[in-house]
View 1 (spheres, rainbow, N blue to C red):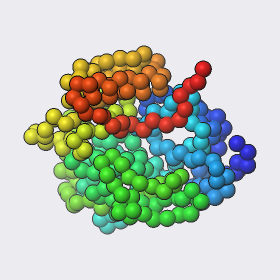
View 2: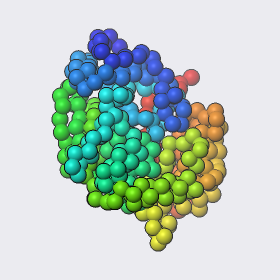
View 3: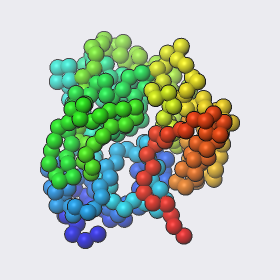
View 4: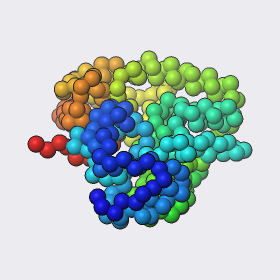
Length: 308
């Protein structure tokens, strides 16, 4: 790409992305940009030729980058974008702040954002994907989000602007989320921390947290997240229809559907992105054949496959 801006932050050409995703697969991005601060990000986007695609990336906890890599400038926010402040009943978090840290800091202040505690990832991703669990969603607590547009301007979006749906939101094309403001119900700090501890324990008992995964692979066909309640119905949960299709533990190359939780796709050691995506597609086919349900991917898949 010619005419690339020269920012103050780090701009790395042909940067392999595999070590930046939880699944540890994927080819190179044309460029990886790590902005120094907000102004650096604004200037860079403003100066970047309009035909160059931009892909904002969080901690890569919900992402398969295909083996051929990404024809784009990947923007990854780091220090300078991970602050967390509490102002009265509002929690203001940078897009690079980890969901778990935000939940803990909020709990210290007696604000209940506990559902974020077990969600792997950063706040930018949580807003983008309307992350949720235990029947609570980012959409329920988000007051506003600040973005830098593809043209380099700072803009504030409300919850309504983001058009939240189950595991989805809408952002202007090429926009980069930089921070979000949340309001949650009040709670007693000790009780909130105890609840998070219990949720973590339950997660570790039921999910393969020690394996290389990217969280849930497919959205629940019911169109809502697990509530965590004892009377929660399982007939329209992704794990249940995968299990019923006989795909628990199924393998392709180095990829496997977890034995512990069939909706977790794991890299057993040497999987390629093609193995992981291919196994996911096998699961979708098998589930459709056995139950007539078409599973929708929850993990984002981006980039180009390897060509011979």
